[in-house]
Image 1 (cartoon, rainbow, N blue to C red):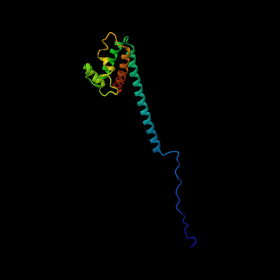
Image 2 (image 1 turned 135 degrees about the horizontal axis):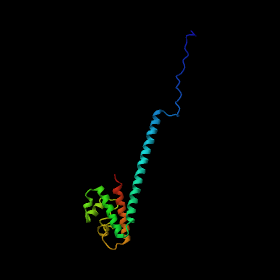
Image 3 (image 1 turned 45 degrees about the vertical axis):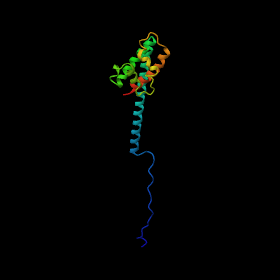
Image 4 (image 1 turned 180 degrees about the horizontal axis):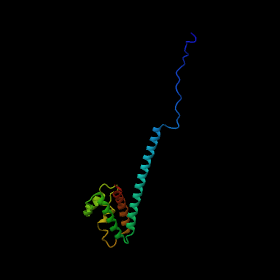
Length: 151
């Protein structure tokens, strides 16, 4: 009988799989994650370049105007162009309706009751205070960027 007896042993677990190299699914997940990060980085860089181009366009156009009243006229023209992207009827507005459109939904309203009122007649005045133009320029620049940066 000694030859017929089986030696029973306890169940042994196999060795744990190594951590490296990872399974193919982890490689695929890594590649997808890197692709998502690369696309997001590219999109943000594109937005940043577009914003910088718009600011350069605004500043160069305004700086090219020889007088403060001409600067107001250029700012008004740039805002009209940007407003057409927001509302196709914007170029036909005038007076308080135009200023109300500029203030509508703005982060910093200031056209109806602030330095932005200079847009109404500043381009037609002989003498315009450069300090008032600069205050309006800051406000208009922010609004121009808000409207032009939208896609």
